[in-house]
Length: 293
Image (cartoon, rainbow, N blue to C red; front, side):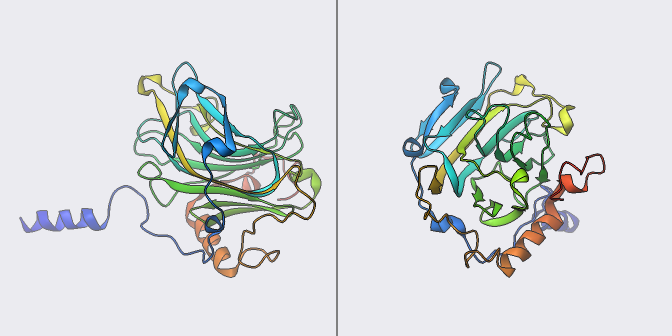
């Protein structure tokens, strides 16, 4: 009996989920500086309208064997803060890509820019991967020069909504999870940094060719529908037709000074504990194509 009680206590103290129980405070919370916008005010359905449902402030997208679904912002931006709270589906989701991203691929086919947050589906017992990526000047079309950094998370993204965001300004891109910066991408030159206006997108789609274990495990539609929920949309910045005096939101408490020391410590914690792939450290990559490394 005593051994059983000890065992139960250990289960409570040391859960088997693999998720840590806390993260450091970044000290600054960019999402708190941006008001929440309604979906109808900022977005339109782009495709798969029959696979999209609105319930109060939650937008649900789902993928089945027939199609997925996606939405697009009404306006293009040339800088800004773009975030949403997202809840993912548990269980078997291999091959499924759930995303929040910036792109101008419809306006510049074959020569587009893109900044991605993508959740790559998984199998039971294994965590989701959060992939961040940057394409510039068509590098995602002709030459396929991705700049991927992949992370696991310090929480279970299927249990509740968490806020994910991209802050893009003329000098840098910062990726945030619950206001904690996980990646920065600095402008070294125009050839490797997106500078043209982009729209904000969200989608769920079948990426079986590459999403899970490099495409080894495909989407299995015996587990359909695959569902993603979005809410708490936050968009603020300079639209394509804003005046040149427009100033986008700052990623840090002091504008134009980079992340604060506390934010940098939080970023280092995230990369030290949860970064699982960095394109700059991949020996199979041709790094003459990624001079920013």
